[in-house]
Image (cartoon, rainbow, N blue to C red):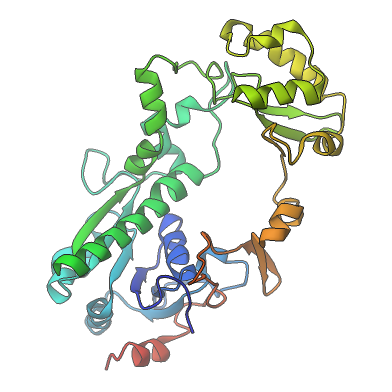
Amino acid sequence: MASGPLDGIKIVEFQGIGPGPFCGMLMSDLGADVIRIDRAGGGGRAATPANVESRGRRSIALDLKNAYDIETALKLIEKADGLIEGFRPGVMERLGLGPDVALKRNPKLAYGRMTGWGQTGPLSHAAGHDLNYIALTGALGAMGRKGEAPYPPLNLIGDYGGGALYLAFGLLAAIISARNTGEGQVIDVAMTDGAASLTSMFYGMRAMGIWTDERQANLLDGGAPFYDCYETSDAKYVSIGSIEPQFYALLLEKAGLDDPAFQNQMARDQWPELKEKITAVIKTKTRDEWCALMEGTDVCFAPVLSLAEAPQHPHNLARETFVEVEGVTQPAPAPRFSKTPGAIQRPPASPGAHNDEILKDWKIA
């Protein structure tokens, strides 16, 4: 039995990669009944517990070149509150499953379209990946060390932050709107739009003259000596984010930084020199020694953990931030709800594992 604040919401998710499946996972974790339509005979691999993004959903395998299976897909869409698709523009229309057809069958449908460049624009039909999308928004160009090439920040900003989260947000907003107005709509989610939206504060700071396009010269990009990562004596790293004056003062106290030059915190012309001094001091102790001095204080400090280490940190253990499902350690559902907690509904499903069950449960002949 599903639990969570989205219990009772029905979502049809067309098989895809990256942000579409991650959005489906988020919706399922919070209680939605998400049905994934996989390609029948499409070579889809059998699910394993390690397919974390596929957790929580049931799968029905359909041949989307077959008229009968297209009709089955439309019958599922008729019963759904929302739809997730991540094909290039025009693919769903060619299949006979485009928004005009779907909304005619289900006028209250929230039709979520997930692409990199969006449904319109000169790049809309071009291939791309997260790195390309965030490059176009200015986000990628703002990250990295001075004098070096920008570095790929995993695919967290385009695929997941600017893509999946905006898709989930858009779907829920459209579902609420449909319940209020009786009218569904299309949600055009472009990772370029979402990634650009995530940079709103930095565009504002640039307009105020307190952010420059030069990398590692700003408050939050590693330019400030009090906001960066530093190597410890055991070749590990710690993160320091002592922005506010009181937190900065505590950093100086805990680190034994009594050089008078540190008293003028916002003197940007001195930042490079001060960073060298902090680098040398942090290098004198191990990561664990710095944790003993600073962790849990108002320094704004945390050790830089690996994916293997993070699930074992006492804070993450206390909050059960990570869970184990069939031997696979993975992030738990988020965020937390006081009355309707989310949960992982089931392990990942192989393509077509629930055909008969889905048709019965959704009352499709």
